[in-house]
Length: 601
Image 1: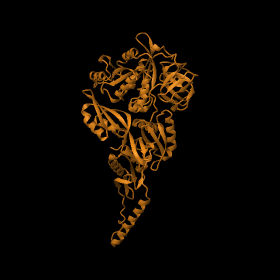
Image 2: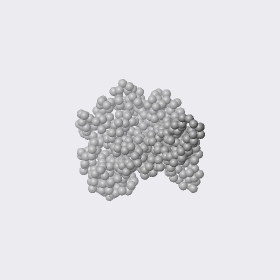
Image 3: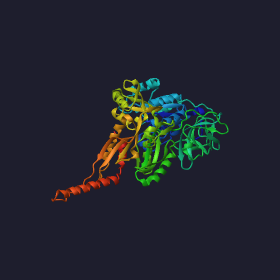
């Protein structure tokens, strides 16, 4: 694929909420431009993982170049950058937007505007992108094109005539959309004579080539043999190969300003090709990198342990291999008295946690146990030292803590008006602070709240969906840190602390959480020959208790008469035996005990 003239280049992306048809629309575009054959086609071509296809979400951003023969007789290069559709990957979305000149705003004609769509539209406006509104799924009987068109008009301020109507599933209107893309997407500014400046919007690891960066060349030219450097890491490399992306990598002689493609810099670690970093030429370096770079910081932490202790080596190898393609995954070895050897892992969010755990179990045939997820806290000690705590076991004793701060998110919830009361009750229970309410139209409202991140990582999204019959949607971003009254809640089994069940909770909810956990454990832990006490404690003070009654053998069954002292002697002997057994007895917690805490109602 040769580099086209600048005026024949069009770079755009598609932004949409989960399950609004983004990947399906990309499939139809690929078919119409001849990139793929529609005979025996595979759905969601740009979703390379089975998990993406099953869940209907995009986890890993993809890019593809399409050559489209326009009705004006010219051939145009359309560079489509597919974007993730979940709030956990909002930074990756922002870098994909920075690599484009326009964005297709895709709205489901049956569901309307959702929270993630609003967030991404605002992000696109910040990047000065041209917004192209498109209404999808008009072939469904439940589609409401007139109402949804008005929602789009109110959101981005366009006219109703500008909203294009398509059905990505059967291809209706997609040809017209491609025609309009050539007219509406701005041509990249041809800065080919300036020094090299390229944005990394994605990266992956190849077993034979090492780290491969997907880039948008902003200015200058990059070609094999050039010496380049990365602005934020300072690493220097010799370019081994460059090329275009067309459902694979097609080698090219060079990439010029305005083009999207890949570069093989010859580095062995994907963490060196960080998303958002700027590539420059060592011979002609530009003073400032491109704006918007941020180091991915994990927000949710959980321990991953093999259910079989003998699988620890396999788990370590699996995480190391997964890390090669996921620079945002953080992990370090961890030891638990209850679960043995494992890893403390940091994730971008709960979805990221679920995806990583599912991939480890599927792709590497592992059976894993995960501990209760929690967020990171800032702990200011009495001696003035500030530390970040992501593990309940590392929380200092109460007398050594001056103040604890937790991350606060700015959340927006899009919902039909009839569910506002129930949602407000839920957010109040989760220590939310109400800010404002906006009405997109008579059937859609946006609630703005400030919420602690710790309150929404467990089951907030599931509760929100169930109480709104699936219509409400959530988007959030972390904005600040605020002081909080949190404590470490420990679970004791027969007086021994089970560190894997410890959790950091707000002191107002400590009793409720502790009571719920001990009640659940009392139903799961099998009965022993001795009584098992399950306790919840804060700073050695017991706040809740449940008891698993002992199994009892009828030792007097063989006594058919005689003096009562014979029966009493047998019962006393049994009583002493149970006391001794309780002192030396050991309770094995089943795997369901840890899973039940995660699924606590």
